Image (cartoon, rainbow, N blue to C red; front, side, top):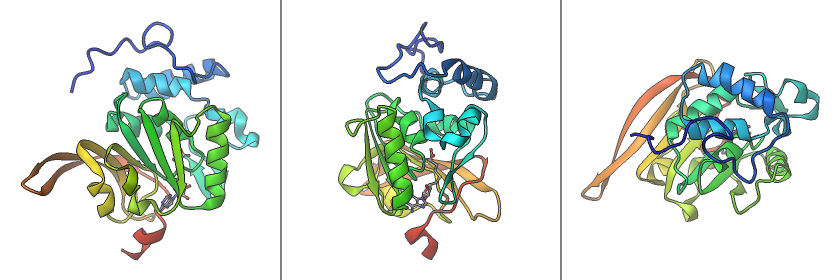
Length: 242
Ligand code: SAH
């Protein structure tokens, strides 16, 4: 799919910066995007803009604020982590979100990936399993200006998806199940994209991209491919019983 109608990837020269685009520490974000994201092959201008836009330092614990723009995962408490910026960018780019899309994230965590999706989608839904973590994610998102009109949050088992808000053009999963949850495939719109790490914690998981094709009769049809090896925390809840 071509993105030839998209403007060039330089903030201020191309796609206008959104109302929530933060200027705090923007030079550090610019460096991060150039060194670790663009140079590593991510060239979707909308994703690069979103990565330059979202103030990652507001999504990490205060004590780690100084290292917020290094390309690595960081602990956010309760045994969970905020993903490495390159992985957030790569997953976002693989999902090809459009401005009019309804997007779902499983595993709110710090709220950072949800904020990046909010810059790319019309509306973003995000589900977090651990109530304590959900509180942190919500505080981070709201504090950074992502209100409930742009990011809708729920505490629960993301295995089941968010039935009332389905179908979604994009679903990003940031905790690894053993196998792809059936409800998430069902909640993908025709033409939709699901990006999900699959596999156990003890080995590298496969980051998979699933596409929903037009139904044949009443049967949904999907294609999928492996993107790269990744390491995410395991998906809790129903997934653990599989
Ligand atoms: N997307 C996050 C990083 C996620 S870390 C960010 O940008 O910071 C993975 C998160 O998934 C953890 O917070 C973990 O508690 C959550 N999680 C694990 N199993 C889950 C499930 N079944 N449903 C929803 N969230 C889950």
